[in-house]
Image (cartoon, rainbow, N blue to C red; front, side, top):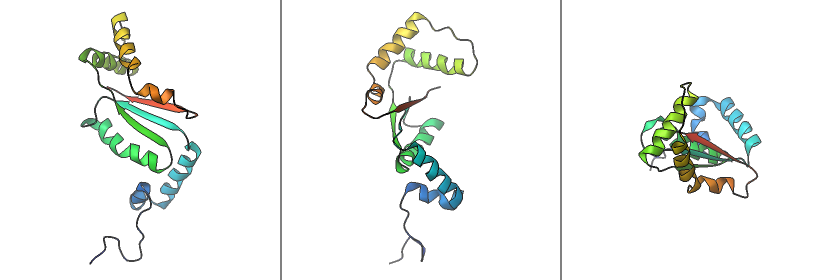
Length: 137
């Protein structure tokens, strides 16, 4: 039976090792060294869809890679009403330079949605630190 691994090569011990032929051993080593300094950091990615779109495509690979190098990464897909997502779109546009003026109703919708969301568990965890990265547009 033929092996999928070339003669003299070893099976990859990590997901990052699979990228070594593409990025080079030096870049692989640098990434591992940087990840070592961040070890123990808890990261929660938040976005509005698990399928389709650039963020979902990136997070489907990035989250397992982050875990592979010793970070505690997770990905939460938030659900909400169309009014909630109109508000998150306005926030996104504001961060991109558009003048936005959220109404008190927008704030209430946003507070209600996050009050009942799983990401709060990250902030209340016993982990020494938690970073939440929100990926909305």
